[in-house]
Image (cartoon, rainbow, N blue to C red; front, side, top):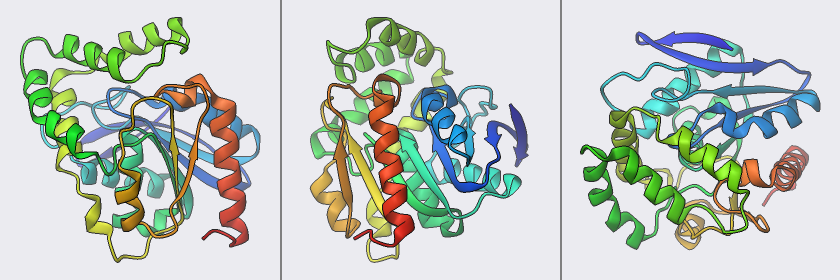
Length: 264
């Protein structure tokens, strides 16, 4: 594990140098870089340069009070890319990490040659968005950990997902500091992908799972012309851990298409 400091905040990350095209893997809300370990391992073994951060407030990174807006996360990742010499990467984000990847491409286009969003609420359906203020308020109360466990258990897993993995994920997620849980969810609520409409964006792949949809793909397609989509088979929200071979193959195919210039 390496560390870097931005504006006094210590950020933890892994970087594995290789001779092939770089990738950046960004974890989701209340998670850490281990949630994308199968992807990091697969592409590092293939010879790619791989960067995997713990976002501020998560994993081994500092958890300051203050903003956890998507642009703050994106600027942190851009600083780590600069620190590691990573440019023109395929940036793959799971859940909230996909929103961070999208914002990274908008704010720091030199870092990003392509985006993979894995079950990310980048264009949240209206019913889901309407429910967020009450959820955020609950996260600011005394039962934040219980609120997270209830939501994640109910909404993000399938009955066929591995039960032991589910329990480990739940135990890990509820250990995030409550102020981070609430502030990062507020950051997702405040995020508006329409800011990217009409702007040049790199190729984008959205990978859905079999959990209830977190993204309005029809709306996202109006913002991102040429949006590519794929879907895992037999997995809930945590597909990078549940069906890593499927996710790895989709990312590899996206990389091959975008490298050849054949992307729509």
